[in-house]
Image (tube, rainbow, N blue to C red; front, top):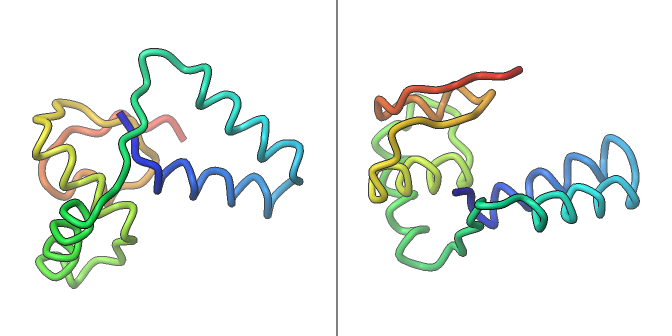
Length: 98
């Protein structure tokens, strides 16, 4: 599971670091990954994320980070692949490949 915000961040990273072609290749890779579910982010998720950002105000959380933290809690995710240590704030173990 990931969010549309994370996909947007990834796309922007490839666009800035490389070019449009690689950014589009990244999107194609996401589309082809199964069983990856890209979760939309609505007002409820955003509100929950803002609450978490306030709770962890001493951390440099992005909105994408905070939405991820919320979804990991609400979906009872047991493990997270990430190179971002912020995603371990709520106790979900990280598998860091970076």
